[in-house]
Image (cartoon, rainbow, N blue to C red; front, side, top):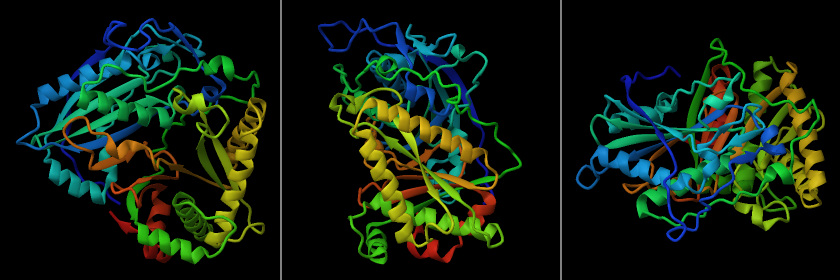
Length: 447
C-alpha cells in the first residue's frame, strides 16, 4: 500500500518532566524511593529498543480546553505519576545493569501538524502507517545508554483543534507491554480525576528475586537496523463477535473451549503459513510463532500482578511440516499444547521459570538466525484497558502500535469489548497476498 501524504509535523518545544514533590501526609507514594533500580533476568532477555504506541484522541471544540491548558494538565499529571513510578524518570547506569533513579525526567515533546483531524482519521483507516509520523524520534545511543530517556512522550495538536495524537515510547529493556500500557492508563486517570494518591505499581526488586543470568548465550536482542530495501506494510482489520463464533463453529469440537484470542491467533497464523508456502513456490518450511506471555497471574505469587518492569517471556510455538497439519483446528491445538505445558512449568518454581525462559530465548534466537525458516510474532493486548485511557476529553478513537520492524500481529479489543481489532505488520510482498487471500477476506473486514 502506497503511503498517503501527510503535512509536516512541526516540533514546537521539548521539555523534561520530573516527579512532582508530594508530602507524605498528602500521598501514600514512597517519596523516599531507592536511588537505584536493579534490572532482572527478564529485563536481560527483553528486546533492547524503544517501542511506541500512539493514541488519537478527539477534542470537542465547544467543551475541550485550549491546547495550552491540555499540555499543562498532561505535564502536571505525568509529574504526579512519576512521583510513584520513579524508575521511568531514571536513566541506565553506566554498565546498563540497573537504573539510576535520580529523577532525570521524561522527555515531553510538543508538536503541531497542519492537517485536519477528521481527514487524517479517514486516511489512517486506509493507511495506518500514517500514525508512525506521530512517534517521537528517539536518538538512542547504544554506546552510552545513560543519556537516553527511558520514556519519551510526544503530544501533537492538529491544526483544526479537534484532535490530538498522544504517543508514548518506552525502553523495552526496562518496561514491558503491560507496564507501558498500564502507565498510559494510570496517567489518564490522574489527568482526568486529579488523583494524588497513586499506587498502581509494585516495585518488587526483581533484580534480586530474579537476578540476571551469567550465561553468555543470553545476549540482549538488540533492535536490528531497519533494512529500507525491505518494505513493510501495516493494515487494521476487525474480527467481530459473529466472525469469532463462526471460527469456533469451523474448528468444531476440541477438548477445551478456545478463547477468542486463541481462535484468532490460530486463524491468522494458519493464513500466514499458507502465504509463506505460496511465496516459496509451494514449498512448506518450518515456521516459528513467538508468543509473548505475561507472567503476572501465571505463577503463584499474587503480589506480582502489578509489578513494574519486564515480567514476561516469549514462548516459541513451532510449526514443523509433516508433524502438524495446516488446518486452523490443528494449529489451535498446537498453540494450546505449548502454552499449557509452559503454564505447568510456570507453576512449579522460580528455578523452572529461569530454565524454561533461557531455553525459549535461545530457541527463538536460533530460529531468527536461520534463513531456512519463517518467523512471526503475535501479541495480544486484549483486556488491557487501553481503550479506556481518557485523559479528560474523551477516549481514543484510533490506536497504533510498534514500528513495523517484523512480521507481526497485534490484537486488542474493539471499543465494545466483544470483538478484536488486528493490526497486521508484514513485509509488503506478504501483505499483498494476505490482503487478498480468500480465506482471510471471508473472516475479516477493514475497520
